Length: 467
Image (cartoon, rainbow, N blue to C red; front, side):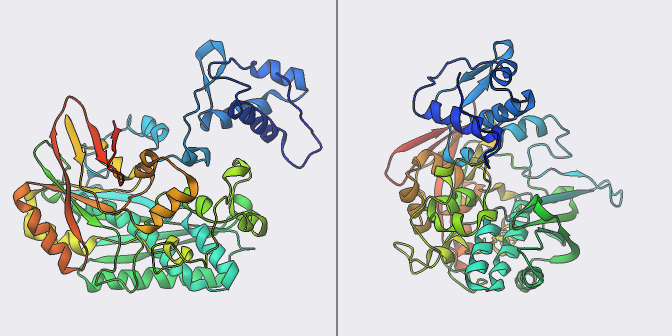
């Protein structure tokens, strides 16, 4: 294999190898099944270090365009990599779960979050949960807005995003008491001054106060602001939550056939929200920002993306943040930065009213509409009555040309929380949700199967299959 490598170029040699091999695969010069030269041979032929070639091959392997075949070296894979994975993210985190699933499954195996014995107080009737998550790359969109407008208040919503991604996961195990949060902000101080930190703190406190006003006991336990230099070009916002609860109150997510699936809409304006919600949440924002926003942002703010990503996948959309979003009263920026809705007031009310009638709760975060496949056994999930696709997701799909099958794996597509219970209780769920001005409807049901799989009817009436 002949590569044209320039050791004096600004682009690192390993990246030149990645780009040239990936281009050869995309253009058909390297067909599926083609065996690549060994790392040692390629390094020797081009006078570069073997670890440089190995680094390039690892990047190509992560992009799912090549694969290791034991002692036979690397082969070109069939071209089935998603746009999402090509940007360095994974919708289902298969490689992570392959490791984590080997660990101790906790005191309640199968629950939405890992639950441990009560190590904090030693009460045998209680359990502990510690949970970590964050706002993801949504903080980069806030950064772009801040750089364009000077308005640091946009980070109020990012603080909410980070908290909600923990809080709404905890709802799925039936948490019904006090929750203590700690926030961690990793920033590049050259690009993110103190007013951003102030806005993040103010946003956290304001959101927690709103939740407490609605009966959800969330409290701040402080946090950490770390100046990490060039580890990040902008800012990353994460949170950690700690809970102690009674084991008897845990919802084990023992999902079985014969249940109704009720979805809670991710759009509109709940009575505890101050603005309309686009439904975007905090999943899939890596693809959302690149597929929606135009290349001007790459040229103006190179610190806001990874130069290792294929250049044709970097800020390749048609929009600026201030452009109107088709089919909506929101701008593109307002839609992408819409704070992640928490369903905590709704779920806590439902838990009080229905108790053990609730068989499962699923926060459609990582994996989106396919998240359900991780829970229950021998269950066929049928989702045939989904909400209309919100304008923000329609715009992402149209701008990117992403297949609908992938869209439903990356984005919530209209509802971000699911309740599993007997069909006779569906009306109760809808009534409680409506009391908070959140639309709810039965979106599907479960039936017996040899193994977990999902049939989903998409916005065009086509059936998408996942397993």
